[in-house]
Image: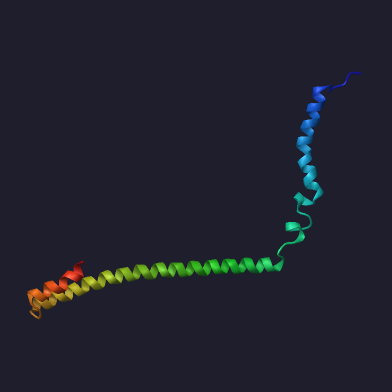
Length: 115
């Protein structure tokens, strides 16, 4: 009777089968994927992990809300500042037109408003 695998073919087949199945055998010895009973080998955070995760996300959401409020306030302040300067210049021009201030005082007060 003639053997199907001889010499180098048998050694090659043995080597390939070891490469294929050896990692699976090593993982199977420690339980499901080497983790043992439960996640993290049974030493998980338990209910503390759930509380800390909820606390983490609540803090992230609060920080995000404060950041958005800060962005809105700073953009409003910039817009108000620009509008208040233009309104001040309008009032100055009105006072000059009514003759309440002279040309020298008008120019002196206008320079800081336009810069």
